[in-house]
Length: 197
Image (cartoon, rainbow, N blue to C red; front, side, top):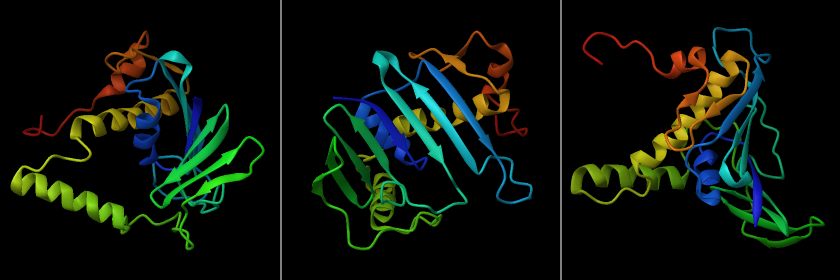
């Protein structure tokens, strides 16, 4: 069906994991650089992270936080590169193409979103926030359970640790923990302020 997904936004990591049906990777390799601004920001503004999973499934996350160039005609999203065609899916819909790039189905809106929008003021974000508040107030079922979001959050942390150590990490696919690299594993957690442990 498919073996490789490309993501343009950290939130698309959730979508990529769901589409592949994966939780924790077997390896993580991340490279990046900080070039756009000369400030105190501690993370790269251009970064690529590759997450390999059991069964040959791969997610490649591409970050370009200071450059709004659309890719595949979309401001952000998850691209599925399949054996019979491709699909890009984002908060605005999806586009399916055949192997020659001919559009098979397109649900994209006429007005594209802003790739540099950091506010999250789109309709799906508002629905997500409403669901979260309803879960607190009435016990409604969460559409995006915390335990599932934690798996995606861990991918981000593993990508950061790989970038900071400058090497590919081996990961236990059952627990998500780094194996065979005690130095990298030291970055697994931080020292908390007293009372916040």
